[in-house]
Length: 147
Ligand code: DQA
Image 1: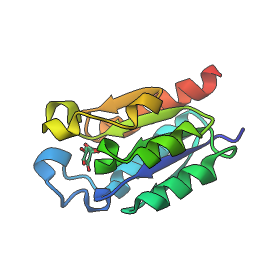
Image 2: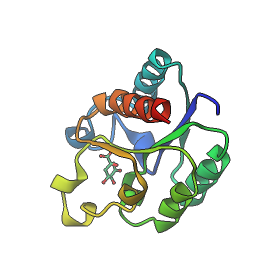
Image 3: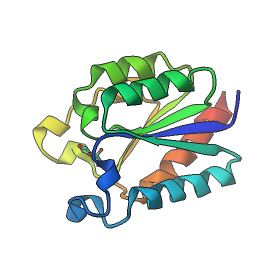
């Protein structure tokens, strides 16, 4: 198995830095991808990043990771809360899955308390802002190296 980790970013995360900075911070998505890439280097993991505002494109990226990537780290944005097709695609992925959020959705509006990713996730990192990107890659590395 390769040492590539697929880092997936869902809808509206392309606006990070600008979008509700009081919740999501001022760092951009590129900053977070940089953090994840650097964290990956420490574990000999290559981070491949895909961002899409379209559910089907995220599903295609998960399918493309099957048999090719060692792990998936996913911040599915609002798709987290209702996109069961993403849940099914992740269930069909053979390696570890880490669910990632900048904020902690469980402490926000009630509709954010449900995660369809959580039942298929091996680890969840939420509420740590940008540090979560490093923590999620560290968690993925531990899960990959455990098997
Ligand atoms: C988010 C939390 C989601 O509820 C929200 O829809 C997002 C971002 C986070 O990273 O905190 O778009 O996934």
